[in-house]
Length: 129
Image 1 (cartoon, rainbow, N blue to C red):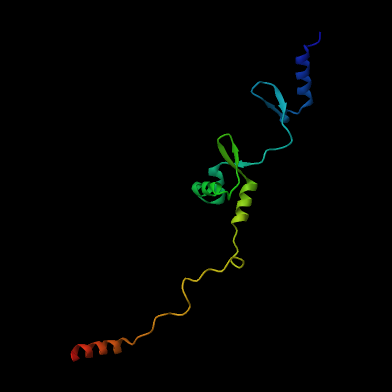
Image 2 (image 1 turned 180 degrees about the vertical axis):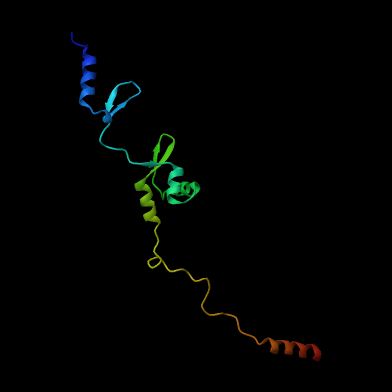
């Protein structure tokens, strides 16, 4: 006697797959794991630790559009490529950056006084009055 068709298909599927390729779904049916692996996604905390910054800095960069991210439902995740791209965009080279603006002119607009002379002139002015 042959098993029912659905039982035969399940038995054939189990025999043709290596047990490492099987994952049991919530519906208790076996399915094959695809060869495409999902990219590693980091939580906000993990990404902040990897970049050695606080989560607030990371969140601000994301909100400013400087850091790409993946939203899965209400969760925000960062891929390795997103973090690498953020690092490259944030890279600065002092030799190619714009020169720093000077805070003032190079010449001093004030004049230099001899304090002894000024003091003596004030003393003479007081005595002469």
